[in-house]
View 1 (cartoon, rainbow, N blue to C red):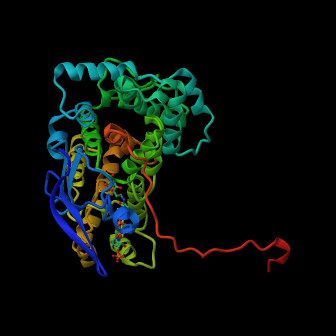
View 2 (cartoon, rainbow, N blue to C red):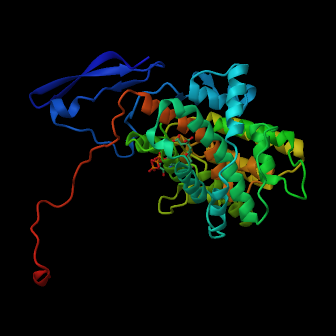
Length: 432
Ligand code: SDX
């Protein structure tokens, strides 16, 4: 389905009038179609941060920010997290429907086929400084994949399943290898007899002296958490993936750019900063009230990390599921984490505070997820890498949709220039 004209709007400036279409999507959200605006009126729109602008139409993800609804291809995220495996949801995002047994088996075969990285890539890890952030390594390794598969440049449609499953499988391997290298431990290779999440946990935590580190409770929690992150329509990193892909850059270069965008602390990097914030609060005697007061003070750059959202003006449905996963895992492992108590007190007091109520600030996806990853033993600086592993199918689906729209137009917004008028060069000897 494409956007349907539903109404018309009249723009009147002085004694000029123009009529613009009003279009609507499947769930009734409406937009002013301004695709002919500059040609007809000479005007552009002005919307820094694009909070009021739709960059595309998409059939992938639907968010109702006012009611806290998130659906991938029409399925509620809560139902997918409860009933599906991450690989099935990845298939859903990329192919548009949940796989049957045969499709699932073929998808898994391709993921296994591509789970190794070229042995030459393993040497790359040895030359990063010890304190290199895993997201910087991940982005560099993903764009480097292009050099091992030069045919990528042709962007041939018939190669797409190989190209897509290759990066879906290798991203998980690169993340685990990067972690092992940071510990100085031998890397653990992927195995064809393990499912996606078990394989990742095995690569991360088994070693010559630790066999079978996979706790099924944690593997199940990882499966659910990855599903929660799979896509989120036109968020910052997905917009970057689309923009880079619109220039005809290959999929791996586009994904690498998306990883860089996700690393920002206002975006996916927030999950790492949530844990650091909770650790700081605990170190300061657990005084939640002072953290809340700082977050409300605009003279202080401090914000409650994991709180607030551009689209959700209600509780992020992913945060609700992530909170329950965290409590279930702690109950199952018996490893209680005092940071959860601090997080819950922070949430309770913030949601009771008029400052947060007036601005519709609620916990977002990043508020509780890091606490569960801590239960798995995943280090704080790898939390955004976990976000990237979950988000990868969404980035791929967004890229494919953008490239599938006939002849994609390169993303190139306009601006309002407010700089100096025309100047003439003064020779340097005569400059003041
Ligand atoms: C993700 O877009 C997506 O879908 C992203 C994501 C995805 O799945 O891809 O959902 C993942 O990035 C989640 C967000 C993770 N980031 C954080 O948790 C960082 C903390 N949150 C904020 O920085 C902020 O809420 C943003 C960046 C998430 C949203 O910023 P907006 O939409 O630009 O909102 P804003 O900065 O204009 O804030 C509106 C008001 C301001 O106060 P006033 O100027 O109106 O008085 O709310 C205040 C802000 O100061 N505010 C906060 C706050 N978030 C907003 N005040 C204190 N703490 C906060 N966390």
